[in-house]
Amino acid sequence: MALEKATIIVHEGRKKGRITVLFNPGEYSLEDSNNFALEYHIGQPLPVAQFMGGTGTTLTMDLFFDTYEDRIDVRNYTNQISGLLDRDSDLHRPPLVSFAWGSMDPFKGVVEKVTQKFTMFLDSGTPVRATLSVTFRQCQSITEQNQASPLQSSDRTKQKTLKQGDQLWMIAGEEYENPSLWREIARANGIDNPRMIEAGRHLIIPPLE
Image (cartoon, rainbow, N blue to C red; front, top):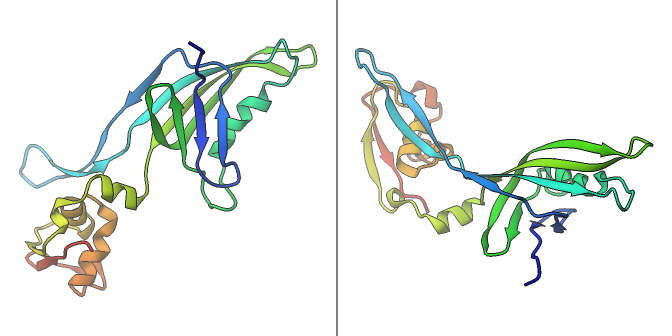
């Protein structure tokens, strides 16, 4: 069976295309975590953990590059990957990419971090061997996220009474699993200044369209 090379697929922007690694990674690691906002209440020994959402899986690996036999600058290859950190002039952000290798499900997200270590040089000082430590951060569009995991709390109107210390973004995180949707609650309740709402107020929690 022929060796299948790992590939980084650039989905959009000026660098759209495929980047094939010179050598497959010897190993990779996946890390998952959640984000919580801690609410502290007077007289209580422990805080209440308010779930804000997942931070996305990270995929981390070392990629090896060697161009010594060809006597060419190894940065011709490494810069293709480190360049995915750059802001694309058309997108106004770095592009979405996928890491694909063999039977592994393609890992879609962005390149979050690249550390380059150069370990061999020609007499001229040109680097010809390098190891890149690359971290990919899983992410997706709002449309993709809602299709994959529709919010159960968004299909009907609810009511909620504000407690001391509650903020609209906290309620949006609890009801919609997305704190940035606090404006939906503010709009439904005629709230112009979310900083001026008082405890005890009854709020309408509208369904998401």
